[in-house]
Length: 274
Image 1 (cartoon, rainbow, N blue to C red):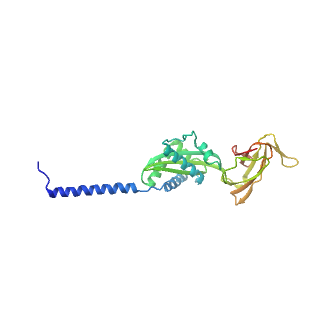
Image 2 (tube, rainbow, N blue to C red):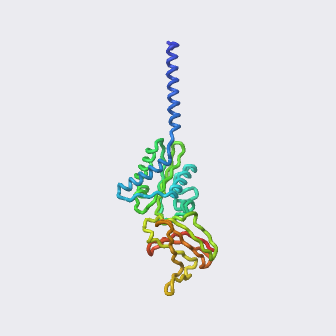
Image 3 (cartoon, rainbow, N blue to C red):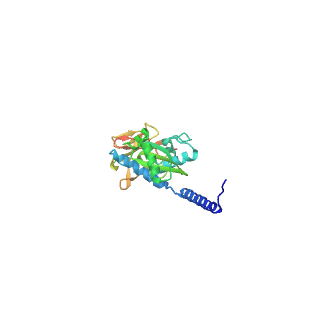
């Protein structure tokens, strides 16, 4: 068998060395590529409103608390190695919102989740949106005329990405964690932001009593049973307002409820007075 000449062996060695060097540089370049999760979140948000615009729907508004809630679920799915709307505590999105975002009072809430892989911000966002738009339930959330606000959260491990969208129809948001207890006969002031998609002048608030038969005298002729209307004090423009509350109708759970006109949302902020 004929062997390689020293010159041939040298040339072959050079070729192998160059190939190895090229391979090292390519792998190192790929491993150094940085994917910006904030950019992916922003693109998913923008693509969502682009899809809504195609169907004549108004754009969803960003909401930082919903962003945080969505990021939490994406990170939790990634760390705990599961993929579901129900987390390992048995909570779906409404349960997570109650625990992790008690400041937000809403009339409806929804969620989309996805996982994908890639190394390019735009392609990752496009793959996530493409999957959602091809899925009936996810598409319905994106194109719902019920929701007004959206939060997006992305979690990453190497080239694997988990994405969560949290949709909501907020009513108000308390400034700071809402009080859960108060002393009997105590007066407290709480501040809120109006997030509902209706004029500030139409916002009403009431304080429900622990005793549904407790009377609140409005004037000489009129009274209410089980609740009192609250005066909304606007502090800045038509979004920031204050409520003054007095817990003088006996011990128990009081509830601040908000409404529009003469209709009130069933859920509110509960405060235990004792």
